Image (tube, rainbow, N blue to C red; front, side, top):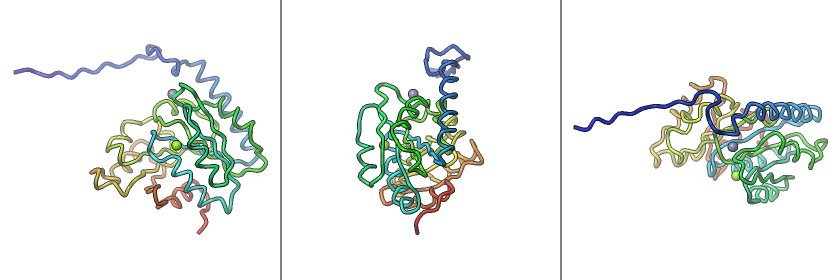
Length: 231
Ligand code: MG
Ligand code: ZN
C-alpha cells in the first residue's frame, strides 16, 4: 500500500524572495502612514480602511455605509485597484467625492499612494474617508495606510476557511464583516463559526453580518465603527 506523507516546509526570516518583506521598505511605509494619520487627525477626518478579496463586497459595503451616513457626515472615498475605474465611478454616483488609486501591478495600497491621493482632496470639507484596498487579504496586513480603523470583509461564497487562512489581517481588524449571509445555507457555511474564528484571532474585533446586495446589516457596521447611521 502506498503511504502518503505530508511534509511541511517553513520559511525562515529573510529567506523569502519577496520585496514586500523588505524591512526598509516596510519601515518607510510605516513612517508615511504615521504622517498620513497625523494629517487626518489634524483635520478631524476619520479614515477607515476596507480590505477583502475581489468580489467579497467591499464596494457594495461602502455604498451602503455612504447611504447610511451621508446625512450626518461629509464623506469621501479612495478606491484602490490595479487598473480599473469601476469602483470610483460607483461611489461618485452617490454624490461622494472619490479618488481612484491605480496600483498597476501592485496587489495592495501603500501609505505613499494614499499620501498622493490625500493631496487631491480638501480635508477641511471632510468627516469620514473610506479607503478601499486592492482585493487581497495577505499583504495589506503589512502596509498600514494611516487609517484610524480597519474593516475586513469576507463573503460566505469564499468558503468556510477565509478567516482561519488570513490570521494576520484579522489580527489587525477593528470590524469584521461576514457578507452574503443570504447565501450561507446554499454554500453550507456556518456564519457563527466564521465569527468565532475571528474572535479566536482577535477577541476585540467587532463581528457583523451583512447582505450588501440589500444593505441588511450596514447599520450594524456603522455602529461598530462608532458612527451614527440615519434611522
Ligand atoms: Mg471594489
Ligand atoms: Zn501586495
